[in-house]
Length: 171
Image (cartoon, rainbow, N blue to C red):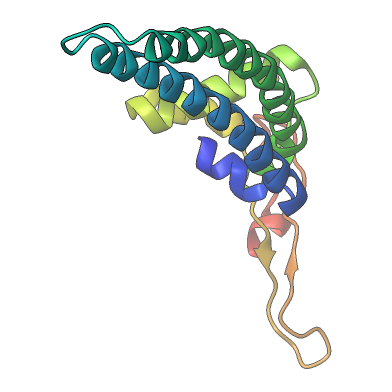
């Protein structure tokens, strides 16, 4: 659900996520580039006669992979913090966009997101039934009158398991 989550967070957080990912990708690319450069340089250094300068360049390239690896590891912590902020700020809005109400307890919230995942990835009909407990009531459209205009009114709240009375059904 990464795409959905990314779609509901503020643009500033999306930009921050891209920046943190760019730094991490840069150091990973440098790691592989240095390793490839070292291998090619060693291959060229031994083509017929040994060239000490090329061996020194290969050694520097291989030693620089250690630096690039460490920098990539450091930048992943920044990326991880940005992803955590994205989840913390986006999950409530994502739930609202999906027509779900956030439960009051964290264990219930975990259960709700697990059910959403089960429904999306495994098409589990049991998840759909249980997910109904977390759905928001859809707005009930009232008859339009010239003074009221077109507006939706929220459905009246009723207790779980309670049948609506006849006046509520007639509306």
